[in-house]
Amino acid sequence: MTATRMDRETALIVIDLQKMVASIPTVHPFANVLENASHLAATFREHGLPVVLVNVVGMAPGRTEQHHVGSALQAGWSELLPELNQQPEDHLISKKTWGAFTGTGLEAHLRSSGVTQVVVCGVATSMGVESTARQAHELGFNVTLAVDAMTDISAQAHANSLEQIFPRLGETADSREIVALLWKRST
Image (cartoon, rainbow, N blue to C red):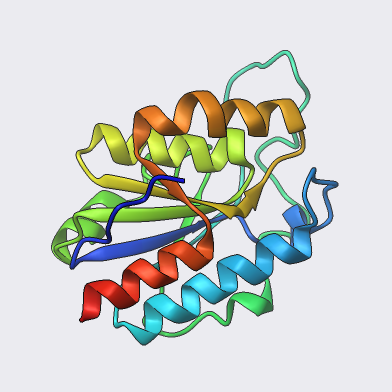
């Protein structure tokens, strides 16, 4: 793990921890991922830092070789999990693409808050998390990835993101290390 520090204005982006995703088999225990992401959200709130909760409400149009659910999800599937303890000050992003920045106004929201760094976590590592991290990096944000607060449906895809992609996009750490860096930032 290589996270070195948290910028004064850092935001947490939690990807797709919602009812639909909780029902999909993942390579790591989903309860642990949710617990770590929830702890990060609570700590960010305690420090007065932005928390962005992202849910997927459809899919981008276009043909793919793999079947996907299409543009409509069953009622209630996009609801965020209650363990995230969504607060009125949290920013909700509903997306129809893998990444949280495309067509959502997320960049403008973060810039207006003075954010220079994002911590990204959620599901799936190789899809929503990686796409959001790529977009954040391309937009000039410092990126940290909370590796114990994410998982995937594929062990190989998860490992590829952690080992090959994430070191090129930012820094990685587990949630305990990120919390320690947040406290260190405050002193």
